[in-house]
Image 1 (cartoon, rainbow, N blue to C red):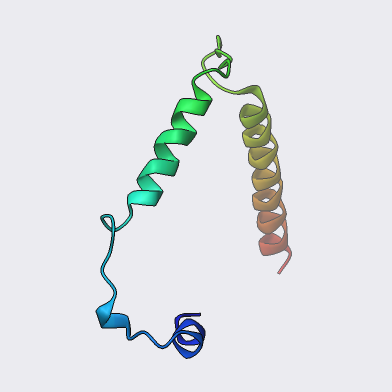
Image 2: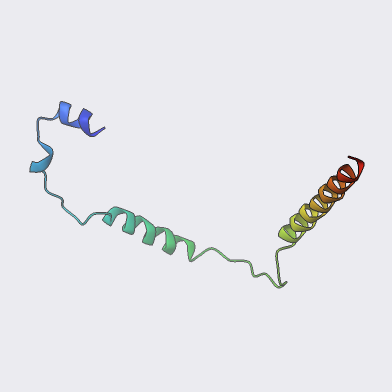
Length: 78
């Protein structure tokens, strides 16, 4: 993209001076994003953990135990 710009405009890259500090537009957009989120209501979790994560962990553990049990059965058969 820079090469395309240099080809279209006959201005060497080292002759251009920055008007603001590097990354200033990122900081400005980040602070605007935070201030726009202040009006959003945040739900409070009353339990010790998220139920969907607990369910996923339970299912994963059950599948893992089944895999270990099948591995033991296959090891005994051979």
